[in-house]
Length: 97
Image (cartoon, rainbow, N blue to C red; front, side):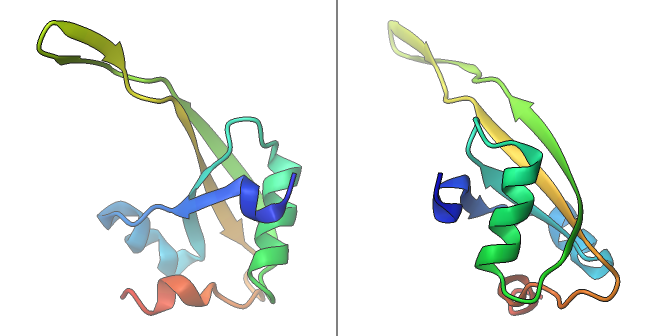
């Protein structure tokens, strides 16, 4: 798996942006990605970032209706990435503050 296939997108939320001060970042990742793969992908994509730990959460799809037809939204996976104290912060999130 390519590093860019593992990291789908950053998640920009009020809670997530508050945690960037503690060098914690939130990403949507591939459902099949493991914690070591996520760690390697973050360190490869964002140069100078050293990952201390990765916490993941899996979300199931929610039931939705559109008229008579019903279905589910896609299930997905979220990763909370904590960087080491000496690590360089991720510049993408720095411009959003």
